[in-house]
Image: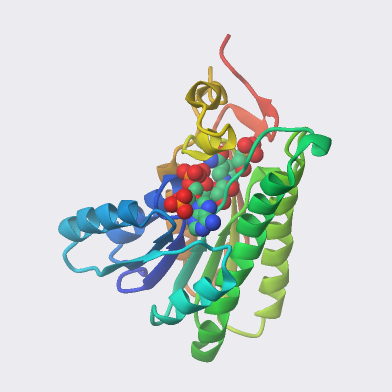
Length: 254
Ligand code: NDP
Ligand code: 8X3
């Protein structure tokens, strides 16, 4: 029997990409799903599909903008207990020099990737402490370890995720709560389409001449990390496509 069977798994940003793939993989492992994102209709479609494929699991969907602390608190309070939290909701806006980044783009990245992740974590941790069990898996990025030109605020937001992960791990050291961080390199999702504000050609060029990771590749690592015995915590994983060796070191076929 899978260690994840019957666990209640909250995935933020489950309407696309890595989050959606995580939903599929946790469903396959027999977990109950608490799926959150702003695009509720996508979550509803996913719920229908996954409940049809896996009749033993319960899938609940929540329209949630993680930037609203009040909404996060209300939604998480309505969920019942959370065994595993996958803090995945996040985005990048633009590829611009620091002096050209708009206040709106900066606020959107920091409010979502940093403050939103903290709000959800704050809403979930007290219950985990009370039960002395739980697992928080944060989706960081290689960008949090290696800042690159024109990525300052996004890289800073993911560096913040790394610091928050490490601090929380230390704060829960005397509990059975696990805290992990998975740091992907290039993953082809809607990430670059959002980055380039809907310009699909520009988004496609990010992955030109190389085979990027896909959502399933990262979901498999999330499932591996979540599925270890409770005395084992994978603190951190850096996951690259084979043709990537650093944030900006990517081999592309000519
Ligand atoms: P996608 O754009 O495919 O998915 C992003 C998800 O985040 C969507 O489900 C979106 O849902 C959700 N989201 C965005 N803003 C909010 C918000 N305010 N409130 C709630 N949900 C939100 O990209 P990925 O799957 O690639 O991204 C997932 C995570 O992986 C992000 O944290 C990203 O930084 C990280 N990452 C991605 C990499 C890549 O190369 N793709 C590499 C390294 C890390 P909705 O719009 O419906 O709210
Ligand atoms: C996403 C990977 O290199 O586009 O976190 O920043 S990158």
